[in-house]
Amino acid sequence: MATPGQPDADLIPSLMAASDVLGTGWFAAVAAEAGPGKTVAVVGDGAVGLMGVLAARELGTERIIAFSRHADRQALAREFGATDIVEERGEAGVARVKELTGGLGAHSVIEAVGTQEAMMQAIHSTRAGGHVGFVGVSHDVAIPGDELFMAGVHIHGGPAPVREYLPHLVQLIWDRKINPGKVFDLALPLSEAAAGYAAMDERRATKVLLTL
Image (tube, rainbow, N blue to C red):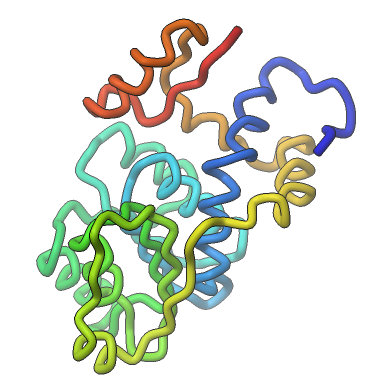
């Protein structure tokens, strides 16, 4: 997809984010049916999870709970629209979300990790009748049938149809209404791509921008 014109240099990171993590986070928020009057919880504070926070805000969500234990990612989550931060994980994290929502759980939960723990944390954090939008690439996730049956939640997700959202996302970026490029906290030359992956794997970077 072509941009409306030659972008200013400071827009490049945000446009790069639109091609991948922003579109994925946006799909997760849509799949979770984030919107006005909803409380959204986001499991995962990586680039996609942070984009899910931003997307939930842009979709009109009033309360956004971000699961995060990292101060820098917590700060960015708040900048993108998070109203609450939960540092607990697993069932402790679920209990905290329930506490914040009057014992009910969130209307919408974004799962942006792909592990068994993250998926169950997402399902258990969702109130009956709520929606889980999952975009974390599954790593041996198996949902027990009895728990799924009794949860009473809607589950939708998978690979994100990023192209569907690009016209809208590019325009938001072009008009400087959103700045998803802030998710890139390390820039490296293309020749150091392997070092970029290592930095993300070791949690020294949230997302790496490679430049020519």
